[in-house]
Picture 1 (tube, rainbow, N blue to C red):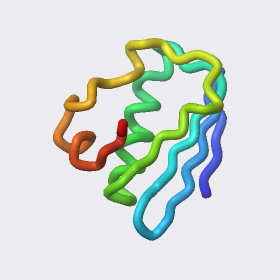
Picture 2: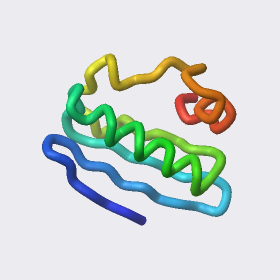
Picture 3: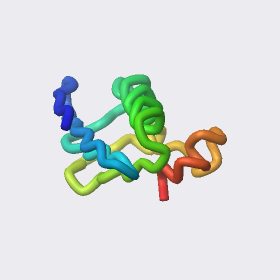
Length: 81
């Protein structure tokens, strides 16, 4: 498990044998876009299937949520299912 804190939000990655879980909490605005994108790509690289847990978020800027078909990697990994 990896845990870290950004300025206004926190993230945790739990890596399992068949999937990773990226749990987000706090408030993610536009300033967190690049870091969130990096985290998603890192999680996909570790495990092909990534579950994103948004339950702990109190706010997420709509620009932070990529379309389902943004990239083949996101679609194939089902990152936003």
